[in-house]
Each structure stands twice: as C-alpha cells, then as structure tokens.
Image 1 (spheres, rainbow, N blue to C red):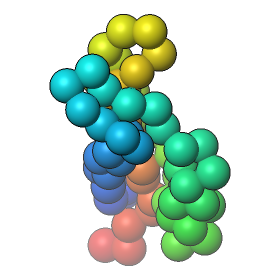
Image 2: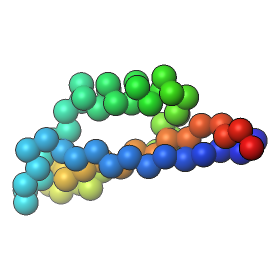
Image 3: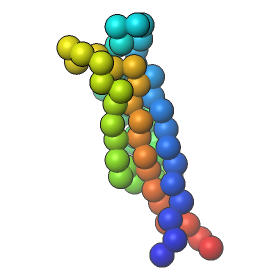
Length: 67
C-alpha cells in the first residue's frame, strides 16, 4: 500500500514570546474535517515552552494513495 502524508502546523492562540495555549475545540474541528477527507492522525507534537505554553503544534496525517 502506498501512503500520502500531510503535515499541518497549528499556531497557538495568543502566541507571544512567552507562547500561548491551544484552543482544543478549534483543534478538534480541524482534525475532524481532516478525518472526513480520509486523513488519519499518526503523530503530533508541540513546540513546548514552559508552564503549559507552546508556540505551535505539528500534526502529521496519512491516508492511502491511489497510485
């Protein structure tokens, strides 16, 4: 089976030099939309700062590719 991949960077809300927090409802909506298009989340990580703050999250999706 052949796969295609998609990498998405999601910026934190109120990001500043001190970072920000992720809006989980917006993140859920984005991931649900990707799932409806056949994308499966295979990895996720953030650019962790401190005290639960981050600049962004990186999401990696895959789906079968017709080749």
